[in-house]
Image (tube, rainbow, N blue to C red):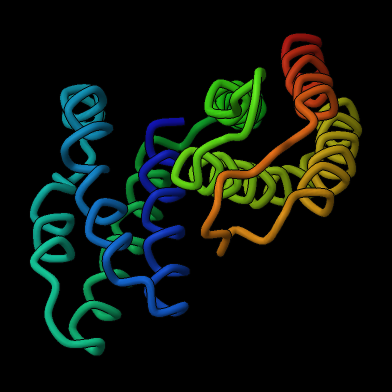
Length: 192
């Protein structure tokens, strides 16, 4: 889930960069090293995962578009190698998807508009979770495939109902479908 959180922040930064919102990008590329990596760094090292910090630092340093794009790809590759080294079970991936959904729900303001940054973070987390679900569809265990199929369908329904992440004003969201998604993700992950 920590690796997915890093990926979601980087994905959002890359999207905003493509949209020309360079002022928002700097935190998306800096937050993973400052906020997420410290909590998982020791565990990754203990599992034999190469240190991601130098890759993140290079991305944070910025540069021209070609440099940023190249460094972004290096971090994404580093995350893929880290996942491969960790070799999570498909049950672990289900739990990661559920954790990402819970984290996304926590960012949504239940009592009024959700600030742009929090909304974008939640949207990006759900997108990364959706990508992880697809990795589970080829599992030999029919229970995993069934859970992944349901998760994918439910994530699609919620994601398609969300506003474009390029919003510039706080977003008013109906939290009920996202909370229902969270409860279902937790239930599906816990049942396997």
